[in-house]
View 1 (cartoon, rainbow, N blue to C red):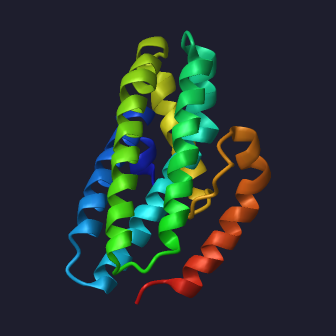
View 2: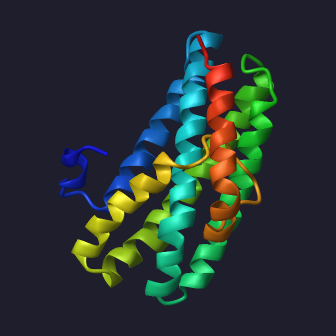
Amino acid sequence: MSPATINSTSDAVDFLIEQHGRIRQLFVETAQASDVKEREKKFVELRRLLAVHETAEEEIIHPRARREIGDGAGIVEARLEEENKAKKQLADLEELDIGSVEFEVKLDGLRRAVLAHAEHEENEEFNRLRQEMDPDSLKRMRSTVQLAEAMAPTRPHPGVESATANALVGPFAAMMDRAKDMISKPR
């Protein structure tokens, strides 16, 4: 992590919302890719960002939301259910021919689910965290989110949607995912 990142005035919520924007952009770039190799490259980038982003939310943001906001447990449970469904959709996509019509249809279904999930997070969880937490805590939490992302699995692992499950499975899954990434890297 560079000193410029640590000294950024952006907080954890801003950082995650910026990632939501990049995720939206990657869905468009993947769907509109001109050839199969380009689509695969964009999809791999999208898959990786979704995996690390969700892991950081599960390990850092959701536990804090449970503690800091009223009905935090209910809000977080709804987000975890959405995340699990999206991970299953993403894992299913990985099994398809990236040049197929079925891939395009399922990618659009995933896009709709992920964007709805991001909207729920931003409106129901992130805004409430911003109301309940002091700005300095949110700024410090950004570096924790970035650290969690640096150590996160890079592929979807349905059923691993809690901080505890991520702590138990995450390091091994991350190591295996990074090995798979090196072997199957699009050329």
